[in-house]
Length: 240
Image 1: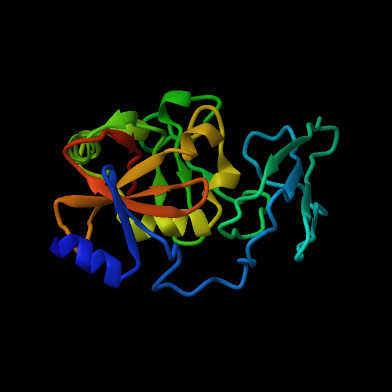
Image 2: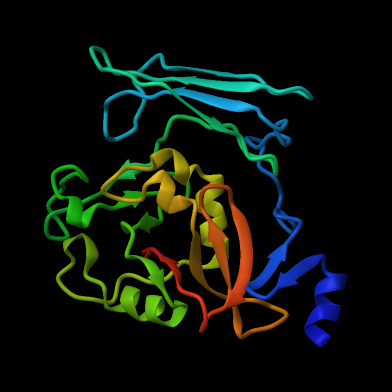
């Protein structure tokens, strides 16, 4: 009963599987790069280049159109001589930052020190957030309890590390920052795919009003929710 009362006061909606903060960005300042909610049915049209690093070539252009009616966002990137594909998807109506070409950095190594790439050494695929420098492992598991995720990250030697101890489960704020900093623009098969990011990723942060619950975040849209850490397995990724 206390949880339900507190939830009602703080704008938290709870169901049998957990709680969701209806004010998705409550308590944090919306960056200047974020835009108001797109209209229902608005679309994103993307023509990415063939470069697996996702880094746009010099002169790449970005054109953004938003409004009260259905709008589109068009992104054009390319390498000289590269091939392009085109796809369309629906913009989340909860509000989203404009999609931009990824500037996340491939920091994959073969043995912890020798540089490589996600394509060359897919088992070690690691990307770095260009804003805060945090390194993100590839998907550790798509279905794991939070406590097991904590243990898996602590024991991980991902990216060719010679011994465990450098990886950990991200906090709720780190997961939210990853979305704000464009992690979904860096999606790739050997790391985290767009489909992977549509799932909830467990954090190491307990839910303030009910500590047996743990925050998890959907990386595709920055949606934070909380659920029992002992009942439902979710996706796990590690950071350092």
